[in-house]
Length: 201
Image 1 (tube, one colour):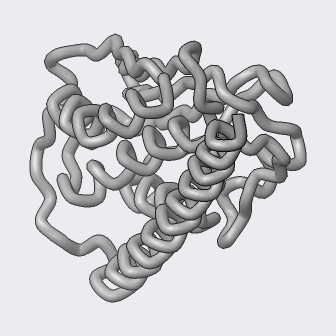
Image 2 (tube, one colour):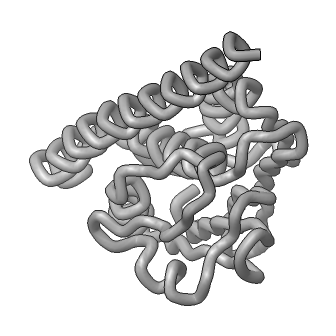
């Protein structure tokens, strides 16, 4: 009985330590990425990028972490959708959004993330939707600011650095795009939406 209790305490402390190390690592990486953005001002090589391939690669990078948290990632992607941009920074957009969805979807066997792409005459739309802890109106107003963080006491989430979404917005806007988030409230999930003009094709 005592051994089981001790093991649970050890497991809880270990998981908390791992989450703290994950946040520190992400903060350092995010800070480096932002410094790089400021230095080269996104004036790197731009090319025609197949969006579905880029998203699938980002999903694969995050799939193991999602599986560990009992989260299923699915997608509905248009195969022949291309965008003209920098592949490194476009990858960073999707990695940040997928990682964010994993972090704020509580560890369980019911977590879901779905990524969709759509195209109209004038616009490309990409969405990353989860069934996580959701957002208040106040959260949504602050989310893309420097060092903003979602206020939650849920111990089954991994709190971020507060920089990732700020960097994501910076990259999206440099590509003449828009990003915003929709949520019906606490425990009702979030949907991050990107739009890029088709003239960038």
